[in-house]
Amino acid sequence: MSLEENKAVVRKIFEAFNKRNLASLDEFIAPDFVDHTNQLRGLEDVKQFLTALIKGFPDLQMTIEDMVAEGDKVWVRIKNMGTHTGEFRGQAPTGKTFTGIDVHNFRIVTGKIVEDIMVSMHS
Image 1 (cartoon, rainbow, N blue to C red):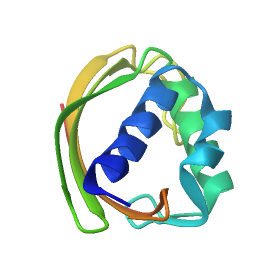
Image 2: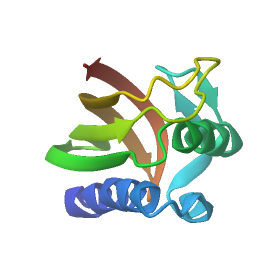
Image 3: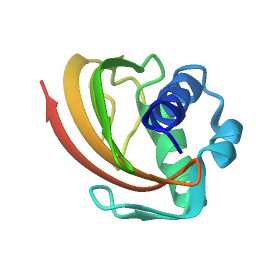
């Protein structure tokens, strides 16, 4: 796939999340996907994690700030904004709004994301 096609896959993932269309993730995430940061394995783990994230931060929006592609990798810097109004990973809601930055390194094979490593900076 071309670099532009790989970048389009990454864009679609964040668009799907922001629209809360987790069912469409099947089109872009490989069944054997690995998230090294959150220790997720497989598409169902991803959906469960994102469902919990949405419950904890129902207004969370992720905005792509920068994107670079090379070979089968796409690096993307994401701005996150949301309010902690639901339980997330055992933590009771704080009601606090946060803004943060995530940097993802996605690896894409035949149009699907197979691997992700993320660095997160939240306040």
